[in-house]
Amino acid sequence: MRGLSVAMVGEDIEPPWADGVVNTIKNWCEGLSQYGASVCVLSTTSQGASFMRLNNVSYLYLGLKQKRFEGGLIDAVRFQREIIRNVKLADYDVVHFHGIEELTSVPPMLYMKLRRKKRISSYHSTTLSNFTIGFKNIMFNRFTVPSTRIISKLVKHGIPKNKIAVIHPSVDTDIFHSMNKTKARNALGLPDDSFIMLYAGHFKKGRGILELISKYKELVNKGAYDVKLVLAWTGQGEAEIISALSDISRKDHGIIILGPTNNMPTVYNAADVYILPVRDEKWVIEIPLSLVEALSCGVPAISFNVGGISELIVNGVNGFLLKPNDFTSLKDILTGLLKDRIDVNHLSKNARKTIVDRFSNQNVAKKLLSLYEELL
Image (cartoon, rainbow, N blue to C red; front, side, top):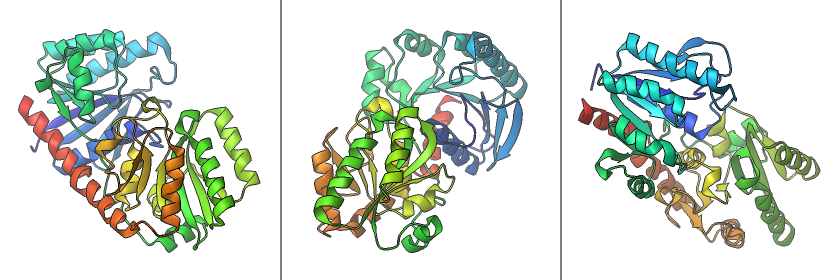
């Protein structure tokens, strides 16, 4: 639909793009722009009020801290007031909210309902506010969720099933694609001949990184394999875990910390396998974007079956899906990969195909446009 004007409203949708939700919104916007939609992001920021244009998407930063940076009630109210002012001036066709739960969000929702603006609310995780969800049912025309399993959760809270659409996170498959592994490793200063296991993301306790390191050491000590464990850090995490991992990396040269980096396609392509050992769904968004990015680069992935990951990884087809906390099976699969008992080329081709077919910016943007068209 050419000429469609969309406002995406969320918190801290800004560089360095080190968060799954932030990147999902960015990718959706860029996908929509490729189909001729005019997209403007209205966001809080840790910096001053500003404007930028990136990949045909406008970003209007209101210079208000909102909840993530603990700006307090005054900043929250000011943010909602600025949303109303901007929507009034720009006259968007669709206003798409992301993760704004506080009662301070009531005024802009009410304003847009009275102005008959089409309103959509997206959930990117299983975190649901029982207090606001009933109100949202009245205020919003549609809801989006990243996986089919969350539909039942919303229905249980009174949201009609016909108001819910599954919209997956997406990735730019022209950026996240397969490249020469040797060149990728050379660019990062990594050894050519080692088997490289990769984790990418926040350094937090619930991510299972310390347990992954334990299994890595068992592989190296008992199997005499040339294995390196690369931890690509986003720059975010818990001070205790950051300190512990830095100390481990200094003492064990087989454990390498990269980052923070804005060159993630190269990082993924340097790996033989990507591992997300997260132990519980509360530590990641419903379908973690790092898994989507790794698969898009043709890198097989191993993950515990938490959240909606089973709607991305098909066990033995494009990666491996394990029971939560089953680090023994994780070690067994890694041993199989090291001994060439598993067809990595088959996994790699299917990994890329999964993303191109279902999680590319273009395909996901088509679904978003269809959703918008139903409302207009």
